[in-house]
Image (cartoon, rainbow, N blue to C red; front, side, top):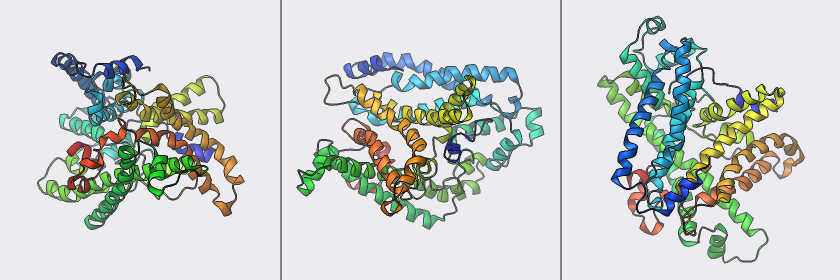
Length: 466
């Protein structure tokens, strides 16, 4: 139990590292698509709040500068600002929703993703206190050689250093470019090897994305109907379960390949841009941002399904790991400790806390998407609940698998069979829903509208570019 659980709660956030119910509002977003949020009056009304809270978030970030870490009064101010900013970024996607919803899924999803990152950053900036200044400075100096020594940072404020500090905080994602959470080794791939990896991931993403969109466009969002149509199979026991499982595997593979292709794209661009801007003597933090060593592979061997815990803790990408710990595990641990729970229950609370925030991350966007089968366009509460509950179920699976895996004979797969079956069964609650019309698959055009451009632009970037 301790080994499995430790992947999520061993690193309580002790230092700052660089880098509801919305039903009524959701109904209004769909009910009045031609008027709400599209008038000039609305944009004028939200312009000043956007500027204000963005500035407040910037100030909050600046207050994490090492010069202020020992000041208790500033720490209290950070808590206040973090509460205000966190609440704002929580409701930001709804307040700034672009309508009509059915035509603006990509924009609204981008709003949500950005606001979630800023919300989690705000919470970390405000509610974590620095206990390891030396380690913090070591990280900062590696990213920027022009940072002054700690004594200088403590004695006076450098506007240039402060600007670099803020830039690092805003541009470095947890779990990718700096060694906290699960440490990622530097990317040592050369330009040719990284380009080869990009092409491979892009081809794999297309091979899995096209069947998913085919089911959406021509099979009424039904994986079962797709198999019946293609293979002429109609009456086989378990066909629906098999189809959903196969569809889930395709979606997971597509997500892995798409995200990895985007990461490889940044690494390839880094191989081109980094030498140029270094030669032109751009600021160190800008050069380091484009350094390809900070874009290592995000996924390990996806086919290595030893356990549910290892899948989510090591195989899957860790981009939001720090956010889940700060927003979920740590508060859950503190609540459990506060009520006097034993150590095992504290660990279980931390595990469920992390996956609860993950469930929030995946279910919240449903308020910004639509269901064409409903007159009001609202996605039902049951679907939103399925999207949410899928992830706490992963925590339950992690707790149960030390008991279940020994019961599965190795000759039929052992832990791999358990892991594959559990993931296909539970993740289908999410994968089938997000690929329907009006959901996340709306990021991509209908297959009938595809041109050669869709075949050559990485799938992660095509909704932004095409």
